[in-house]
Image (cartoon, rainbow over all chains, first blue to last red; front, side, top):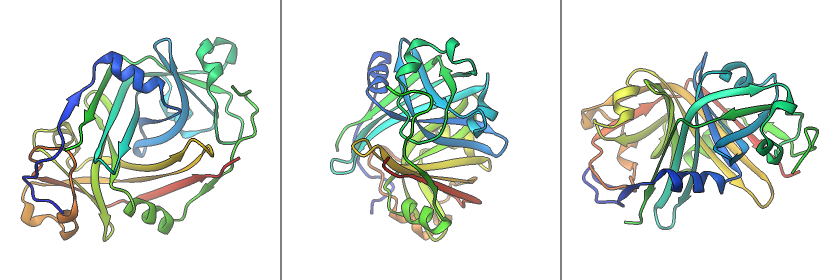
Length: 138
Length: 138
């Protein structure tokens, strides 16, 4: 338990290169969009390479119904409860849905989906804004 | 690398009780809202108890400026890359900002913020919708 005036760890901004390095090191990220029921956040397997974030979904999923050509956020983080530290990266851009696999960027072929089920639709985000922070141990 | 027809792990829905159990076991969650720049996702320390999710922030933060009395999502997950399995919980509701600490719910006193800096503002979410899924190892 802490007071309102606690002295905790320092937050430092990550550079764009550091953000991209963290993004490309992750297998699972979280896509967020503003749907009919308000904001939604869903973990997905993805690949970040060649300036693009690519994940796969079903054409019948909420993300497919509610994301196409709309602003989305894509978030990854790493948290260490032992040292009370971590980092987070937030990519923002427009989601583009590719129903034709042949039009998907080559990096899309590397998306390894852990969950079962057919996910023929590629979702591509080219981040227009990429920000991140690291929380140092206090 | 996998084909579009991969056979992965099974996804099962969590009950509301299971969702709440997972939520209340976490120290860090992610708040998402639809701001002026589109959706935003930010990790925060929080407490989930007595039917409420409570985190703290600065009155000058983006979440304070953009969340009050608006729909937000709050997300937690646990991911195991070794077994390619995990779980995620999504709580949706309206965020209420309490500038007067005396009005904050008692559970708010237990929010232990890892990052330094004054965070006098309590943000309270009473989830109207609580959903979650577990991905079993394939």
